[in-house]
Image (cartoon, one colour):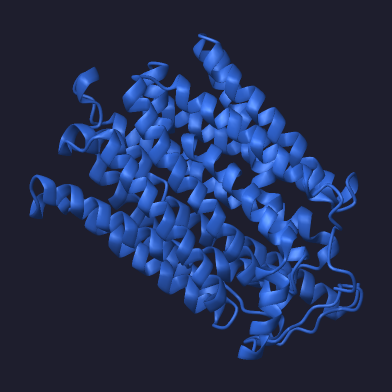
Length: 435
């Protein structure tokens, strides 16, 4: 390996590790809200239906923000975009904890809802700069494997925040009926402190594109456009490569189903496990942590299998994994044993996170590299419409039915629909010809 190749390889892994850390920090300040929800119900009198409304509108705003910031992310400095967005999320999370000090009654509900929407908007600045940097540093032949490694940041962030916030909420136990009273504030403040410390690290270690870093791309690493800031003339290319591309639209529909299913655990998991299975806050945090960490294994294995066994044709593997996700969700409801039901939910995470990672890989490979942020932002818009619909629907179904079986079975059916969407892409090529 020559000097250029060694330098490129070192920088490539620096990009992967730095962007993983950065995106994990965003997750710390997004998924903490789910663990604060039982405390918000008990301490602030907010109902499940109102929390479902928060999740619905927050998801819509996050999806729109991710879509719009996909355009922005293709045109601005990635380090500055990620760090500014992270700083805004830190400030909003600090503000969450002070809401009851300045509001009462209905104004408290409105304040939490507006802050969640604001937080979700700034959360949309996290993924586009990461995706853009990865597209420039990782060649297509390695993308499924290495982007699956990167996607573990979702599960690392979700798993760590699940355990930490589960323990934090458990510290407020004064009796079974009062679990988490007064401690939900620290779900926000603790994550904000961690986010601030991480922000300082990100500012100094996150690199730019190869051109911005003055690193030449070794031959054999694939055709890679290295323009740091695309011109506005790429609008017509975006229209044909993204907005009028049937495969990109279908990947969007697939993303809708994946994230709708994931939402029942990511957003409602702490409440669901405590109410349906009788777990404590800390036990629920452990199960969700294992759900997320199982997803890491699922992502890494699915990335390897896509490159090595499916010749880069990710939708074929995704269709199979979505079917197994449905099976394990049904088993979660069907068995009464806490150990067996928890195991079924964890295995559902193992299956679900493969498709979660691979839709972004497919979108990247089917669009030009200078439009990576736009393509992923577009399919992410579908993702968080799915999150919004699922968040509202699961909360409403749980409240109206008095239990969690109906919401979980509904998500199992949604998994089967996702399998059907992926099956329509069975013959889709692994990447753009000549790219």
